[in-house]
Image (cartoon, rainbow, N blue to C red; front, side):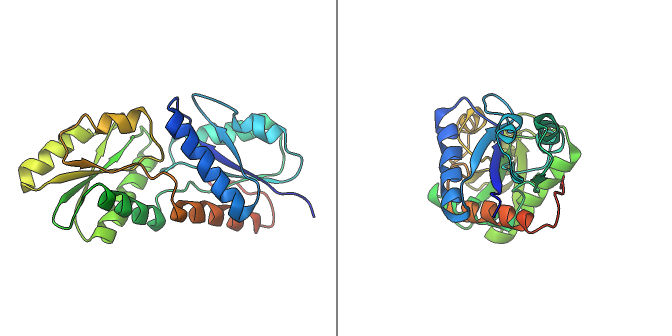
Length: 232
């Protein structure tokens, strides 16, 4: 039977904890779904094109992104084309998804959040309106999970900015305010959240059994398709 290559594509970070986390997720996925390689679209390598160029059989790429912005819609297709590989499936991004909402709820509880506390979802942000819609959808999923209102703030791109949202929510509600980190791994963006005047900052999504299962399901569904098909 022909080997089907699997590639988990992440953004990339100079933070060693972030790099280790992506590697740990790929290792966990490999245990469930077979060998899974890692590629990065920015900051460090190998790139998706470099990894795909080394594969001879059909391959599936899962974008480890929490919203479908520029990297998912532009960078990854360009990398696939540059690889020269003719049998590549690209799945939808991993987020938003109810599985991620469950993980965010776990991370908030670990940070000390309790029912009655306010929640702000912190995302990196994007200039792509479709990616911002994905983030708002993630907030709705988390709100449904927690049975409470969840406001959204952005760390780097788009408005409103996370610091302004934290301040506004505190002034409006008088409650403790906790930040749900809608980030996959540790890095510069997550570090900035600790500079804000929140009562608690949840850890990034990180390595979690639900994340591993979600990625596994993306690979499995794509490999059942009759022919390479791109989903953006």
